[in-house]
Amino acid sequence: MDTDGFFESENSCKVFQSSYSTSPALLKLIGTKWESHFIPRHNLRQEWLRPFLANCSTSDRIKLLSAFLLNISHLKSYRTESVYEFLDKHNFSEPFREWMRATALGGITGTMQMTMWELFHRFRHNLSSIFFNRSDQLYWNAEPPNSPSGFITKWHEALEGHGVQIITNCEVNAISQSGNGNGAEHSIIINTSDGSRHEAEAVFLSVPPPALSRLLRKSHPSIAQGWGHPVEKLWNVLEESVYEHVGISWSFDQAFQNDLPLGGHGVRRGWYPILVQFSQYGNYLRPPSKTIVIGSVSLKTDFKHNRIGTLARSHDPHELARIIWADEKLADPTLPDPVSVKIYGNSSASQIVRFGPLPVKNAHLPIYLATNINGKSPYFTASLESAIQAGNAAARAFDKRVLQLPT
Image (tube, rainbow, N blue to C red; front, side, top):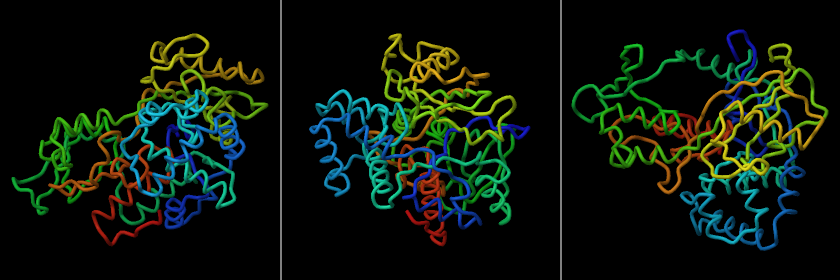
C-alpha cells in the first residue's frame, strides 16, 4: 500500500493451499484465521494436473515419478540438484521441459536454478491438496496483506501489543561484535546508514542472498566464517544462490471478460513470465483502475521469445511489459489495454543450488538466518507458509521455549 492507502504491488506471501499447517497456526495465534484473508482463485486439478499429464509422455511421467519416490523415501537427496541439471541428465520430451521451465508444478516461473527438492516439495503439497484434503483450490490474498484488516497489519498489532518496536526503511550497513572475544556475553553492534549504532543480544537476518552478501562483505570476516565457509566462498554461495526477476504491474479501468489462467497465457512460452490477476483488489486501487495484474520475468535465462526471437534482457522493462501484455492479448483478444504500467525493478529470492543450506545459527555469534536458506523450509517459494517456517526455525534455535509451529 502507498502512503495514500492504494495498492501498488506485491511479490510474496500471496499463496495459500489447504494442505498448509504453519500459517494457519500463526494466524490463529494473532487472533485471526486464514479463511478471513485468502480466497480460492485457481483450480489445481483443472489448470495444472490435467494439462500437465496430458502434455507429458508416459516415459516423462515414469522418470519424474521415480525421482519423486526416491526423494520422499530419502533414498536420494535432491537438495542441491537444480531443475536445469535434472533436465540435462534425462531425455524428457519438449512439452515436459516446458512445464518444468515454467515450474507449473508450483506456479513460479523461470527458476531453472531452483532445486528439485523444492519442486518435489511443491509437487507433494499440490497432490496432497488435490487428493488427501479433497481441495482443488489454490488460494490468493483476499486483500492486500498490509491493508487495515490484512494479516500483516494484524501481525504488526500483535507484536506491538507485546512491546515489540518495529522500525522500517532503516538500511543496515554492517554488523560487528563489541569486545574481542567470541562469547555470548558480547553485544552485537548494528550500524545503520543514518549513522546510528544499535546493540543487540541476538540478530535475525531475513534478507535475500545479494543483500546478505553485501552486508557480510562490510562486516567482520569471522561473521561470514561462522556459517562454515571461508569468506570468499560464502560470498560466492550467496551470489550464485539468487533468482532475479523484474517486477511489473498493469492497471486496467475495466474488468476482464475472462480471468487470466494460472500464471497467465504465456507462462509456458518464450520468456516464461508469470502473471497474476488481482481483480479482488478493486477497492484498494487508485482510480480509474478497477483491476490489476502483477507479473515478473527472469532476465537471467537464455530462452528466446517465440514470436520475436529475442532474450528478455535485450529489452528495457517498459518494452518487456508491452511485449508480455501483447502476448496475453494474442491468446485472449477480449483483454483490454492497460491504463498504466509500473516497473518495480529487480527483486530476488533465496535458493541454494550445489552448496546446500546454511546453518540456522552462526557458529561464532548469536546471529540466526530467518530465511529459507537455512534449509528449514522450501528454498524458493512465494508462500507465507515458507516464510513462517523459516522464521520459526530461527526463533526456536535462539530459544527452545518458542512455540514450535506445525509443519
